[in-house]
Length: 242
Image 1 (cartoon, helix red, strand yellow):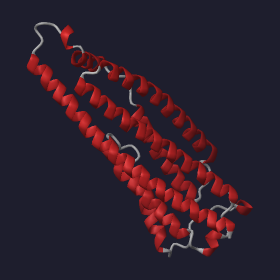
Image 2 (image 1 turned 135 degrees about the horizontal axis):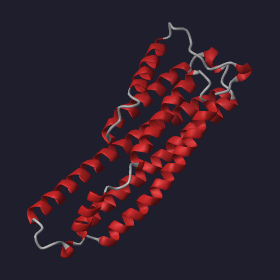
Image 3 (image 1 turned 90 degrees about the vertical axis):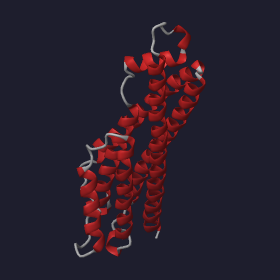
Image 4 (image 1 turned 30 degrees about the horizontal axis):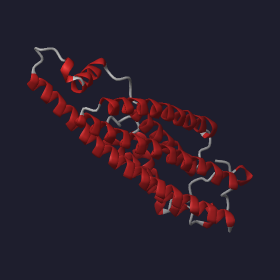
């Protein structure tokens, strides 16, 4: 992020207690960038990001740091806040779509299933647009080595990772076949094992119920980091206006 006189919002004296906390949180987040293999695994990263920005708030209390905060710095930060808001919207939509799907499966509502597939298709386009915007911001500002830029880098990386996970891949044919069996039981072959069908349905339903719980937690975590980002933005604006 650009600052007055070409200076960066760099680390204060190493004697400041917030420095080691920031560096520990930053290192922990960077080391976990490739380990998110489930929705629940994002919880720790989002909470770690919140703690990272809490330590930045401590930096912004220092007078020599306040002297080099610029308007462009604040504007760049607002872009990150907007990106987080967009990801939050994507997760909320995914949660509602999932709940609609669960309800449709229970009722064997074919129209409800089709509505989910249609909404999911729109969601993927929305996610792809968000990913494109995030990557554009990354390529435009990745050369600055400031505190805010270090934090922004891991924030964007985490948001990209979460969006890519929600984007997912194409539905496997086996899952489509199972869904077809659940929704069109009258068309099933006569020798289909009814017990296998019931167990498959229960397994699918249980997995989706767990997914609903996990995505709810992710949504709450994103709301938490969003509130923290707003708090940091307020601090930056107050510094700029004083």
